[in-house]
Image (cartoon, rainbow, N blue to C red):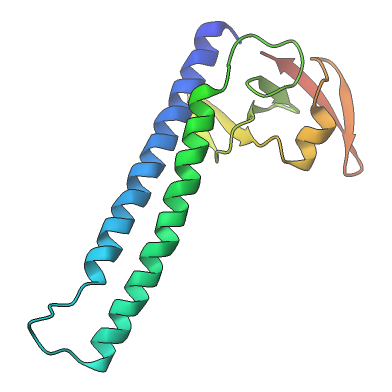
Length: 150
């Protein structure tokens, strides 16, 4: 994997993270709007209950937005420079799969290849940290080969 390919993966990760923040923000706005009743008209107990529920959902979405904004900020500052060892900012191949290390992300495609994020809090990262391409590590009773580190 060359520097250009790694940069494209980073851009796809950033675009996805920005889309997730925007979608969560839209959900907050929608739930806040649903949580407002016209104070100049009468409303039923059911309407009041639904308004209360919408307000609670808005708070949950606001927490989601905050988490996603934090993840985005971390991703924006993560150094994706070349790596020889598994560490945050590396792109690794593991048993034929590819991962962005230090990234919280579901599967995404870039240049026809699927990548997933690998959080530094994950048990697998704890086993892989510091290893090089060609190393084999044991995880949950199985051996895994590191195909490449970029």
